Amino acid sequence: MLPPLTLVLGGARSGKSAFAEGLLAGQTQPLYIATCQIYDDEMAERVRIHQSRRPAPWVTVEEPLDLAGALLREAQPGRAVLVDCLTLWVSNLMMAGQDVPAAINDLCARLTDLTCPVVFVANEVGLGIVPDNALARSFRDHAGRLNQSLAAICQKVAFVAAGLPLMLKDTP
Image (tube, rainbow, N blue to C red):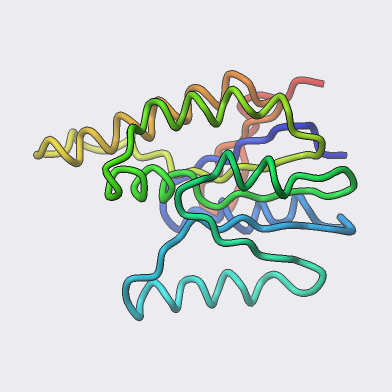
């Protein structure tokens, strides 16, 4: 049984999305909230691969910016939701010139209002070198703060590397 809130972290191509999708296996009404915006053929192919892993009865809702609003609209009793990916959501907010800390605070504040389990997927971007420019450092900092904020309120947090999950938090 899924806890109310789960966070799945990992690096690029770590297997985090497939692991998160597996957490929703057997759910009767799984919903995928996609934050990705497709800007080129390579990203379109990545989306196609993700979609091919999700057979019926998965439903997909695309929401690049208003994640809190989408969750409040779509997270209904009897359903389970997968949000993939929070890191792209942060990037989208930055590109749109939105107040990222305010959006993160709003998202975290609204999670207690949800009536079904939600699994979030996010990249852990802070394990490498310090970026050489202000924009990249700002992105890394926003993503890290979001991950910390969610990890604090999620009942379950997993870190995925090489397709293998390491449970960082598993509160009953």
